[in-house]
Length: 56
Picture 1 (cartoon, rainbow, N blue to C red):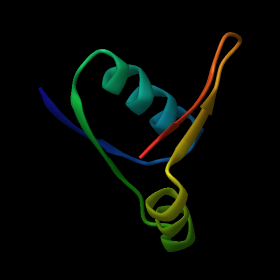
Picture 2: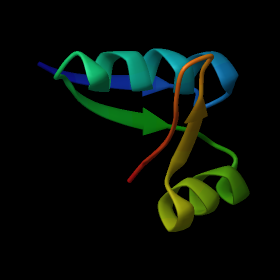
Picture 3: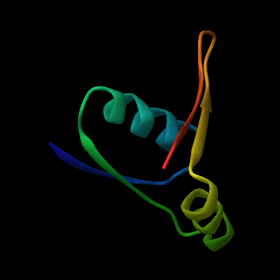
Picture 4: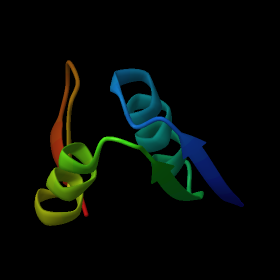
């Protein structure tokens, strides 16, 4: 399923990575250009109790 999440803050990114891990096609949308540029260039870094991973 294709899912768009408006707001790539802490919660939007968390929901996005969980949906991505479940096999969905996720797009994050955010109005803060510096944040968007950082995610585009470095990917999204997610750290949980059991894993650390970058999502492109």
